[in-house]
Amino acid sequence: MQDIGSVLESVVAWSRTLRQARSSPFGDIRLTPSQVETLFFISHALGPVTPSSIATALAVTPGAITQLVDGLRREGLVETGPHPDDARSRILTLTESAASQAAVFERQLTEKLASQFDPLTDKQLAELAELLDRTRRTP
Image (tube, rainbow, N blue to C red; front, side, top):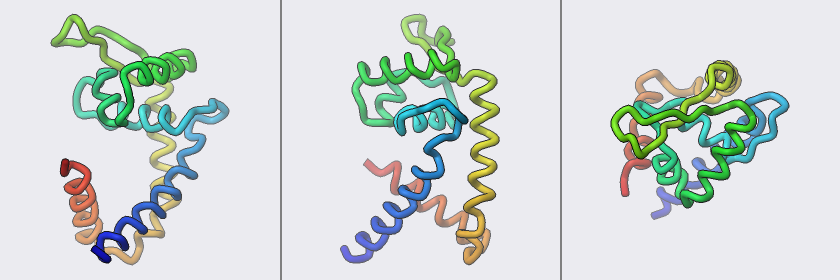
């Protein structure tokens, strides 16, 4: 259990670092942490993103997602459209501007934090990514 505690301590420290760095990825637009998380969730999604998939990922209610998405739409960061496979559902996509800003921000963040990972080999980085992903997917 002590090892898990050490891992959690490191994860929390990294979480703070990333939260501070991600506080204003879209310039002067003031976003909540949940809105930023939603934008990056959409940016990295492998398939259509629905409001319910975001609610599940963020562990919030559908009503909270409605308010969150409405704010992002007002800022011109997301668009909604028909789901290709389900006429009752809507999908969310980043606007062209938001997608571009997210890509630039992520590249800058990667460059800024790259030195933190200098002690690791490419193999160790790949292992770290795989281990973190595996624990994230475990129910």
